[in-house]
Amino acid sequence: MTEQPSRPSGGTAPSFEQWAQARVAGLLRFAYLVTGSQHAAEDAVQTALTRACERWSRVSRTDDPDTYVRRMVVNAHVSSWRRSGRRELTVAEVRDSRERSADDPAAGVVRDDAVWRVCAALPPQQRAAVVLRFYEDLDYPEIARVLGVAEATVRSHVHRGLAALRRELTDQEDDA
Image (cartoon, rainbow, N blue to C red):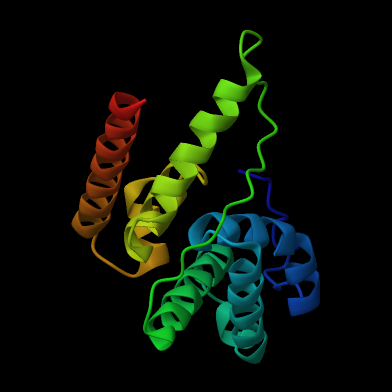
């Protein structure tokens, strides 16, 4: 996770502009992983930041404004998905700075693409829980706060999401 600027001494919260400027890149990365598309990520972040700005006096007084706004991003995406009445399948652009295998660089790309496609097919809440757990490296209580659900629900979402990932990836390997 990235280092977050702390509140200035004296207990005063930063202005919305200061806060948003320091976090917009991280929110966009997070939203991209949750939504599966750059366009949907930008929409979800814009919606969340607009709402956060309108309510900044209340948001800035919370224990963790970052978690609060991440939850707003997830909610914005889920709301847009529900409004559309259909599930959107996007072609993921793989952005990975990790070193590829020296033996076969293409195999790493194929593997990462397969993982992303399976992850993108997960239901929104499961995908959000998996992303928060393994990309954002949050623990279960933190994820429960972000998603606004019980910790047991988070554990269930992560468990089911990983089971689906394993099942689909194993099936794909067997077919190859």
